[in-house]
Amino acid sequence: MKKLHMAGRRLALISCALILGGTMLLAPKAGARFTAIPQIQNTSAVPAQSPVVKKNNLPGGFVYLDEVIPSAQYEIRYYSENNFTGTRVDGYKAPLAIFSRTAAAALKKVSEDLEQKGYILRIYDAYRPQQAVNHFVRWSQDAGDLKMKAQYYPKLDKRNLFKLGFIAKKSGHSRGSTIDLTLAQKSTGKLVDMGSPYDFFGEISYYNTNLISSTQHANRKILKDAMTKQGFKPYAKEWWHFTLIKEPYPKQYFNFKVE
Figure (cartoon, one colour):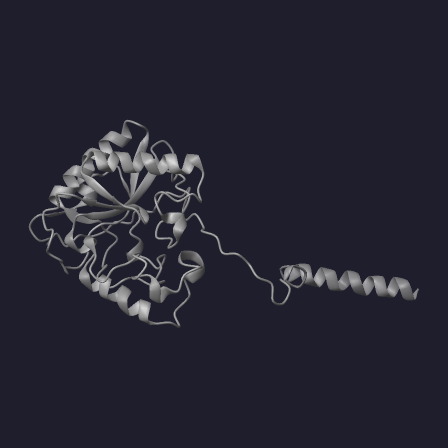
């Protein structure tokens, strides 16, 4: 009888743990260590496109990219909280991609070439105001703000991101002809596997890294070849980052808001 009573108590305790979500049964051991690995973000979901009222007050020589390349997907990360700062970045008043007219014309040719091969572009960032870059500087100096470390820079000290070349105090994006982008399947909208997520700071994001598969590297090459064909220069440490070689404002850094 005593054994039946003890068995009943054990069963009751197990049932209680399951009702509470299994936390008692699945809790990690004290001192357990986990290796942070890049998470593929929004691989299958097509970014939701909410109606945006544009200010239509751009400086001469700049355009809204969605009006030039309507077939592309637009997921403007710095307008959202899903970026390495964990908050909307200064200067991003709308989820829009703005680009110099010259660079936009070249990117349209890239898009047309890739569509013939079954791909469309997903654009994460284009023109970036200087005030956004200043925001990055302030963020890097706040040693206590580590809420996005596991997702974006698990093995790095955020204070070294400038020294390592992942972000800069003067960004080519602020000149209006640098873009961050990737590929998606035209038929499904699903992201092409590039081996590491956008804006992941680490060696796996280097174009020539040996940490990815041959298929993933081949996918990066499809993007790189299409961009270089139309006059864009890649950045070796970020497979998603390209600058128009013959950019129209090579020495001018803009600060108007994305709106």
